Image 1 (tube, one colour):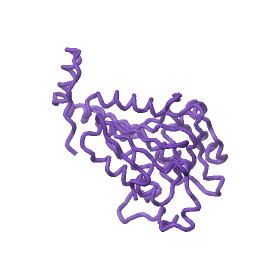
Image 2 (tube, rainbow, N blue to C red):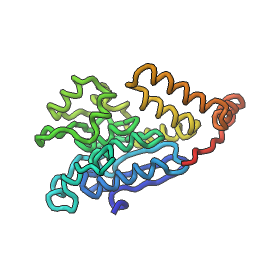
Image 3 (cartoon, rainbow, N blue to C red):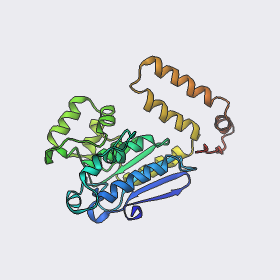
Image 4 (cartoon, helix red, strand yellow):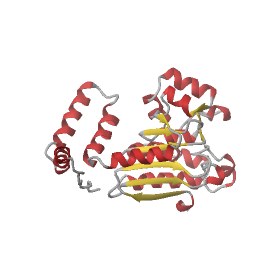
Length: 266
């Protein structure tokens, strides 16, 4: 069933994750939730992957929850909210939060509708590139609900609490340019998928050890006490100094020849 909802292609150290329910604007039914969570779990340890591009096939990135499917399908909304013993996040939260656990950068290419759960999935990425005419919204208020797909762990790092509240209280739809102005997306591009692939290729050409360490540094230290953040900087740097990939980076810088890096063992 996962292949009916999500496909992963790996080429030149970049994993492209495609949501493939285009006829429904990649709306989230039970199978889509399970497939996205499985994709994120796979990429936490996929050998050779140095960057991930996440996008939706068809006219939209993801239009949010497919409400009708949960009224008749095998997966209920109760299943989405159930938390396995010892698990930090429930299934609904994992499809967004688990992208933060992938050790390499995740870039979301956003076009068309990116509503509700779709927006929260995009917020789980490290970087978001949107089409100028993309439509993004924290949509849950329209259904009398709160956003509950790990938005408390993602949106506060991008915008102030007043902006987060306004977007949540109103369900206002932003275009890609407005979302970039507020900081909800990183930048806009006429072809966000091509821009995301170009950026992923650039990242994949850097030392995978340094890239992974940089993601870990910012994710763990961004809101940490200064004492903890400064120690983490030193620990990560000490591990990199003199390592084979760090030497390869220095050699490439001196010789102006492309570096050949070894991928970490998962």
